[in-house]
Structure formats: structure tokens, C-alpha cells
Length: 54
Image (cartoon, rainbow, N blue to C red; front, side, top):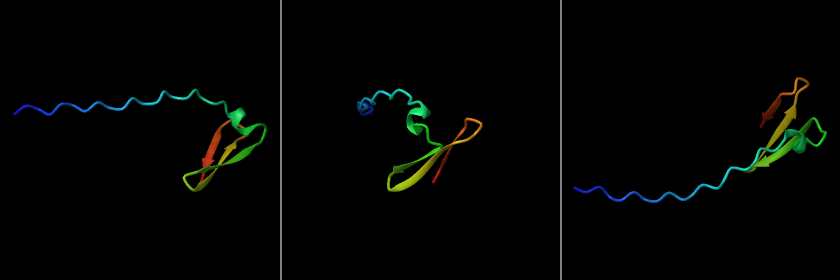
């Protein structure tokens, strides 16, 4: 039996360029981000790491 033709996959949107963390934080230590009805906190540590918590 012949196989059905493969469906064409929609083209994925091109990936956005990375945004620098200092552009997000704008001099603050932490910001709150709303995503899908939840609030997340993005925090920069003294060692230059980022922590994302819900």
C-alpha cells in the first residue's frame, strides 16, 4: 500500500536576538514578569547569576 504524502510543516518564525539582561533589569536587582497568568521574579545575584522564581 502506498504511504500517504507527508504534510508540509508550517515554517517556524525566526528566533529573536538575545536580549541583554541589563536591558531587562535596567539597573534594578530584580523585576517581575507576568506569563500565562502567573508572576515570576527575575533576580540578579552578586555573583552575576540570574534566578527565575515563581
